[in-house]
Image 1 (cartoon, rainbow, N blue to C red):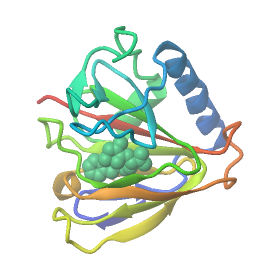
Image 2: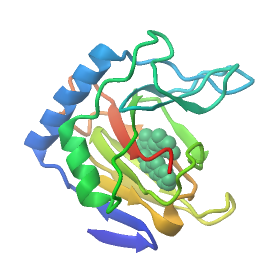
Image 3: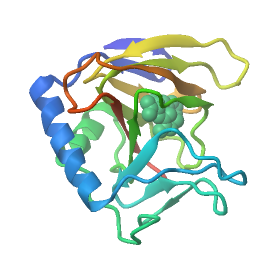
Image 4: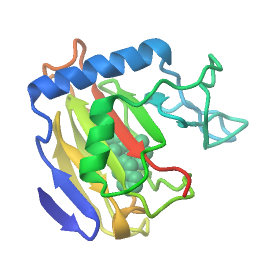
Length: 203
Ligand code: MD3
Ligand code: FE
């Protein structure tokens, strides 16, 4: 483990290959029940390049009319989100140090040309809980800054099986994915990356 800043912890290679394969199998089941959707920016309706789904009691969604929010059902099927896989609940218990269980697990799928601009996660009302993130598949260039957009940033090349914990003073830092490095992992059938983020939404 590397402690990088107050509340910011990095566990490179936390999940070994068999554990990564088990996570991918669990996520494929989630996607079968809750298909990937294209999130759209509030007001403009511009599509994000990442495709998403969720598991857990709540899921993060965004569309032109409703904007960023958490809701208990899939935006297209209207069905409740599937349960969070046990391996991810175990990770939360180990890594978060938070007494209550995660309410949302956002699943982001990156094609080789997908990106995520620098942003803060502030659609939750519980900022005392950390966000726990797992990377699977192709490597990416991940950027983290500070709590102000103008703060200096550092970049990390994240690999499959890496875990990041963003808590404490790092819960509201700016972060984003600048690029995917296609062909840097054999975990997934097709090139691309999956990121899982476990979150507490409500106090
Ligand atoms: C720091 N996802 O879904 S994970 C996101 O790789 C998101 O898909 C990126 O940013 C991805 O919102 C980055 C790392 C991450 C996730 C949530 C955070 C860093 C965070 C919340 C607070 C602070
Ligand atoms: Fe984020």
